[in-house]
Amino acid sequence: MGYTEFNDDLPARIKEQADIVQVIGECVELKQAGVRFLGLCPFHNEKTPSFSVHPGQQFFHCFGCGASGDVFEFQMKYHNLDFPTAMRALARRYQVEIPERPQSPREREKNRRRKAMYAVNEKAVSIFRKTLLNSSQAEGARQYLEERQIPAEIQERFGLGYAPSPDAAGWNFLGAQLSKDEQQVAIEAGLLVKKEKGGTYDRFRDRVLFPLYDRRGRVIGFGGRIIGDGQPKYMNSPESLVFSKSASLLGLYQQGDEIRRRKQAILVEGNFDLVSLVVHGCPNVVAPLGTALTIQQLKLLKGFAEECVLLFDGDAAGVKAAMRSVPLFLSEQMAGKVALLPTGHDPDTFIREKGLAALNILLEEAMPLPEFTLKQLVEEHGLTLDGKRRIIRELQPLLKAAASGIQRSLILSHFSETIGVSAEELGASMAPVPSVPPGPPIIESQPARFAEQLTPLSSSQKRLVTHMVLYPGSLSELKEAGLRTCLSGTIGEVLLLQLLALLERAETVEPEELLDKLPPGGERVLVSNILLSSSSESAALYCQGTEGELTEIIVYLECETLKRRIKELKGILSDQSAPRSVEDQQKLGVEMVELINRLEVQQKKYTPFPL
Ligand SMILES: [Zn+2]
Image (cartoon, rainbow, N blue to C red; front, side):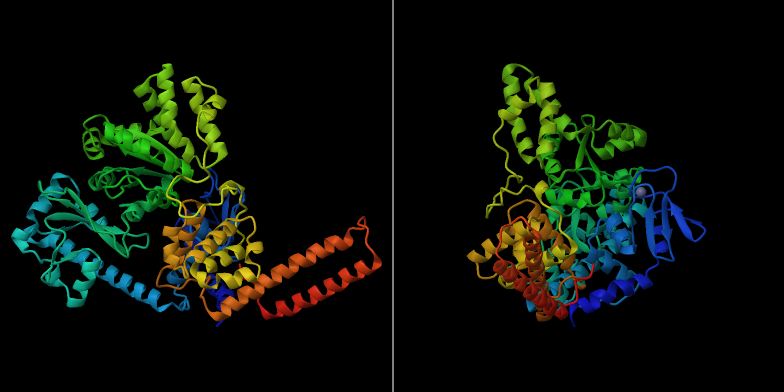
């Protein structure tokens, strides 16, 4: 089956089943007004409703900001999804069956292992949860949670559990409750540790456990806090096929909706800080898993919030952590703020002692990150000539991370005022600024193309790029057919050049390897988005990697090339000012007719890309 067949048909079938009023009504409060429904627009700030949903025509429209579209458009815009993901989500919800994408044996095996890991993690959650609730071995854990004032419903919300201590339950508490196959999976998932002489023992012992969920609510790992004085105090699952610490945030699954509603995320350091804030009425919180904030985590948050407030301890470590995150915020172009707690407090103790109102004041007074950084530097070095020199030196990495020239000059002018140096002088004292955040580039990024100069991808281009990433094997054929011209001036072209360079060095490239091999920057984001939206057991709607699909794409590319040539010729022919013999004129005319004929033949072979 050609992908166009079901792709044309599938969105229509989903749209038929999906109830746009129901879907939007879950995110926006709607009131019926005649044949349509009205509400406050979720895409711009307004006090009187100008956002309308039309069930008959199945579309929404905002008279305030002009946002409009169908149910897919709404899902994509509101939940920050790409088209295939939005489509899959709606298909799942309205029980429209999606044909499976044919997978390579390696992909199938990986998916099988992933599924098995989710299942075993899920089982572990229920075992640990039951233990916490009912077992006499969990007396201490229950008391600990009570002392921390975490009520039962919040424990339930976060799925808290308890892994008993070996003194009470032996060293193979979890393993003993799993089948042989499950034990094997549990080793891979990091729940059990394999003993050298055979057998397994529990990784998590005498710990309160926080299950870590991905955005779809699957359990990808655990974070554990020891009861009592043992070490380490916090312990997470090791990295696995389903769990990457630097790309996960505790609380995002449970609190994501609140974060979206408030357009703001508050980042705290500890698991219990997070839970404690939720308990006391501050719901838009997440916590990184004992690491400094990473770029992947920030990217995750960007899908939910416009702004992130770092709520850190006021000690030197907190200040340094906040300053270190400045480049991340700049390169992601996300607004970051810092709120420092009074010395001796963490978010948990602060909210318990001072209450929500005091916390809200602290959050309202949070300082934008660049400003905060400068203030810290001025405090540290002073504004003597020497101090200024030191400050300028410390500002360098920050400026290097600025995502655009505009951002850079904004920072420069902002800082120059405080330091009392002109922006030009300040700028001139800095080293030249590279176009991408620093990192270990394996291949040279294309320095001539800054992200801001690239044209956004059209939907056909997106499809081409998706195919290119998922099936790098067909790259040379696509290139022959004119892929580069079709992607000209977009990030797709940059990516194509890098893929070709990669393929020159190695015979094959697996999609999963791309992330490691690409230099940091927009291309990597693009690839990770494509991989994220296609790496699941459900089908990638865009791409199936079948022969038929490849042929269709090639025909498409050839048609595009022909169209371009025809357009060029038309331009030449209509240019009367050019001196040209009658013979030449005729030649061009004949070529034109030939091209048009070829285009017609080619066009009969393919159905245009949907979207
Ligand atoms: Zn609007």
